[in-house]
Image 1 (cartoon, one colour):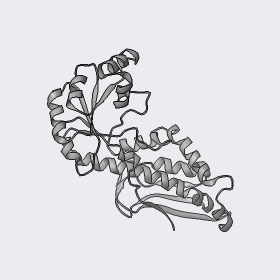
Image 2: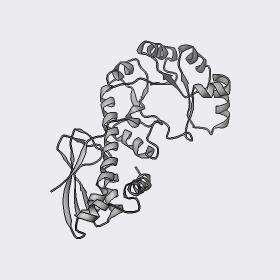
Image 3: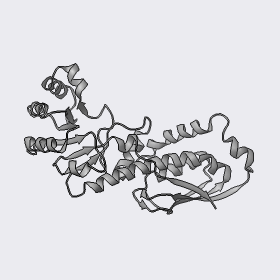
Image 4: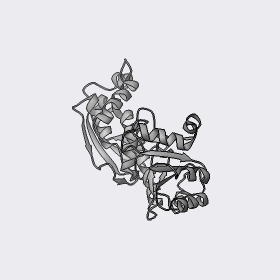
Length: 277
């Protein structure tokens, strides 16, 4: 992840929290010269992501604050494990505490959820992918956290890949017309994918020049039939209704990719705390 991916995000988050008056709680009851030491501690097991982002929160507020990580992104923490130590002006640490914890907890939650799914499909050959269902403004951070958890990124936006879905087909006329138009207009090397909801639609797509097919909300038996129909000629992505409980069953059908929206739009926050010593 590039520094540029989070500098603006952190700036907006701090501005949102501090407003025009700043941290009136810390400023009113904590002496200006007070110094503190603290530890970031995991309250539950998980996969860490966003250590660098959390550290930058305090750098942006007060470069004199010392943030010393004990682990790196991708590290699997256990409950009560120390993630980082921090020291410096008490007011600065308190003012950045919630912003740092919000970002670190969210990113680690995404990485943890992704890792659980990746582990669940281990040995099947299927890969876990994210979607565009990210938190607005946090896409680069969300997708980075997916990679830390062992998943792969789908397209980053509407600009880097073609995904023809149901409403596109209604507007374009039919599958063949939509694919043909896209193939003539996008630059070489850009992936073209079509979403289908039935085996009949899949048969139509297989007569066109596409790179990947998204099999939307198909059960295991229909997914197996889709795999048999394609005979490895094209990449198959399954999506819709994926849970930790059923993901291995879906993976065992032979699909190449399983995309999961909830790992970014509603992944549980990893519980992390900052404790002063």
